[in-house]
Length: 417
Image (cartoon, rainbow, N blue to C red; front, side, top):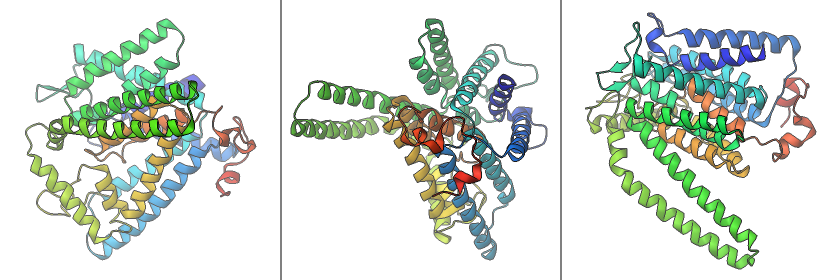
């Protein structure tokens, strides 16, 4: 049953991007599969009332409690100002769905999460590779004849699905000791890069480039620190070396941004398709920030609040930070920044450089699209967070309140500060 549940969840997550399989409805095969899993999981949770609760569960729970409160207050403010979005209920349902899905995922042990991730990246890569090579009679796998869109209507939907596959496969590759398993992950990475290139999403390429740059830089930095510790240099000398390496990192980042400027500019002009003017993207960002000004603290509730010519034309700003600020205000932005910061710190603290690079890459991709409505985004972010929770290193997980297999009621943990 555990294997069946893992396969069901993994395939369902992948198929939420299969918008071509939806028949006149915003709900597709993947959403139905995940909704079924959430319902069964919720019933099982209510019946038994006991489950594994980790620090990630608590952090994610409080992020959404703060966000949902901000979204509710923002909706009331928008209604009073006659600025409510026509997509209010659609986005609200998507947020609640993501919240319920995320809570259930964080309640699962790391072994289950790893199994779901492995099945997900294997199924996604193999299925899309077959579509890429052979197509399908009931799908249109190419967008405009030049961009691979697989089972999605829009290539950018598929780009989101591909963002984390190379990083997750690389992490499992580094953890594996079996040469055949290693070879399998190398094949997955190679195929995912080929598919990503065929999607031709500038946001995806920029996100990958940022992640690779961070991964290489931090790996060199970590090796340098290990070398310093091994040689047992004096503390003052270590401080000097750390300062020099920090200066080098800043210089390297500035150099990288300079080299990447052309690519980032190109990504800014990619709204839905090639050929759009970069000014459209800039106007969407500008008008999205203007919308935030109308209700800075709590936002204007779920929905799109930007527009190319002016704000409040029910168009997304196509930037997660701006769109989320328009929906949940400064309160929501602070909660989101704290969530990203906490997950990133755990990855760095437990020395998971690939996972930290993946988190930064995902945040980079989200700067060109609004992703908080999508279950795929939350699956990736929570997967990176879950894999970063090293049970042997994390003091919280070693404490008696968070022992793996703990059977204390959830309310016992959520009621504690």
